[in-house]
Image 1: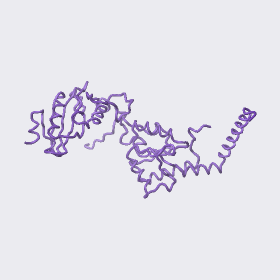
Image 2: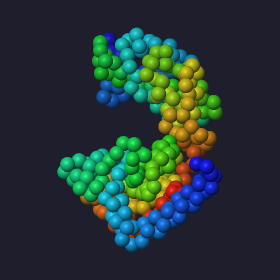
Image 3: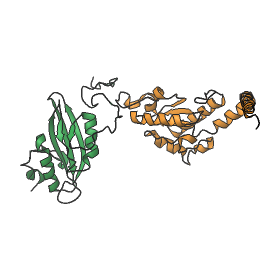
Image 4: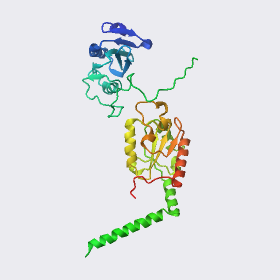
Length: 153
Length: 176
């Protein structure tokens, strides 16, 4: 029984290339699905990332988990959810994967996603006096735009 | 001991006169040149690796290029050094540390900005988290390159030595 078939009941499952499986769930189911993944053997979190989607009014949140042993050794799984852009809030997954602490802190700082239950949501890469909006939001204005060279002309 | 007050006043004036005389003597040509010559071969950089140019700086210090030949010996404590090498990108949090280190260094002190990021931001020129070195510190020598070769660092050291020997530096932070 393949991994995608096992996950079928948990959310919207999609098989990406190189054997990566993605599963999309509503935000309130995130922790439950994460615990199910941990039981399957996905024992460590690789990465937490966010995508700003202003045209949909959403912020995408992706957890990448992988496995060090067992049946799914070396398999990568992407746990995706979409949050409301005006007040993005989700339950922290630190209880499931404790190494989420710094990754969630960084995602909070750069995209403004509130993680409920996270013990220290403080600035990590940005200076502590940062008062502007989170810098990876699309409406953040940089001082000078980059130069674009159109090679198709 | 019978009249301590007048004694201290007399000694104080003597000290002041002696200081003035010593400063006058040091600022004359032969002694000043000797002092500047000594400073130019005692440029000791502090170990502040802000970014990836630190690799080239480390390569510059190792036996192949060996900058100790120029009297250029990296030290750990800012209080024993007089050159601050800003090695590449300076983020906002690191800029605070660089400024504190610069304030801790004894005078005369020099700043060298190394790499494209320290000059003008480099590939991070429009980043939200970057500080250009000349905005917070008085830079003496700029080294272009991404990253600069150890030979370029050697050239910067020689330029800085020439600058010191010609007396073009200030005693910032020293009471007159």
